[in-house]
Picture 1 (cartoon, one colour):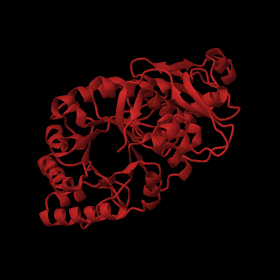
Picture 2: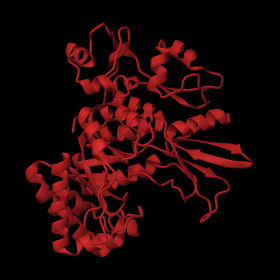
Picture 3: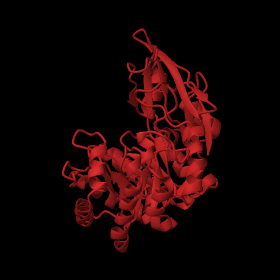
Picture 4: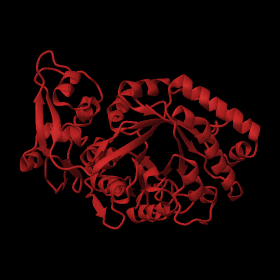
Length: 425
């Protein structure tokens, strides 16, 4: 895999010719709209194709995959343009294999709200070991808030992606509740009743594991929370269902703040089968302009985490979005707009802004002016995604957890597929 940085005046066809690549394949693999103007500083992922296949009359994706001894999901991953759909036509060109060595194999998990657009979901599912519909919350009485996740789970089953049930303390108002966490963690009868509800839902809907995300837990409940995770694991393990716990991005054990104090890495790492490090949101809606997940910050969390938790239990959290801040930034007043990585590039192209790359944060950014207001944008591109994903191999982690799948980003999956074979859940 090569990452080409677009220079002023370059075109997709010119870049394709330079590398001897198929321009249409290059466009689809990088999520570039037809006839789009490229932005200076934009990244284009180039992969040398080792084996092509031209579809013959009567062939199906299944027969082609079997002919080459290739898993069907891998065939989808090598051809993002299929969008997770089995329909093909005679004369269509498919990539069977790319050249270049991969770093290894990894598990992936992606989060999605029930209202995700079906085409976007289908296109991304082959790149996911697990799909986690977001979220089953906790009621004011300690019960389970429902989630309309049937459609997501059916799509996942069709494309061979396992479903993880997501349990959080999110309320009906979409806010995390310390009070509801405390209610569950301090009442053994409520806790057991909640576990029975969870098990019933998992059986009914075919879930194959549980992902728990209790946030803003007081320090006094850190042991109770770990005990709850251990209790869930005792109940679910006999059925072969793993339990994962989402962890705030800590860099030392006694890090102060409500976000961190209830998450004891050592206790939760021992209690859960796996953990997700939520290594994002340094740059956030109400904060000053900066990278969402600066690489040095991510490394600091990993350096601490691996001293408390076995490496093979850890999923690295990866953001699939960016932010657009109006300037000047005023604390308590300025609010950034969350945008997709695709939208960020489109803004740069439309505004003729040059995309820069912060070598320390390992993240792209740019500024533009609209309506008399200067804006600063930070997002993810092929370089930043590659830098984060390589940490999985470097640290010996289990894989990556993507927040989230709501905004398609083909180039991100192209980078993932170039670096790793995605394991089945």
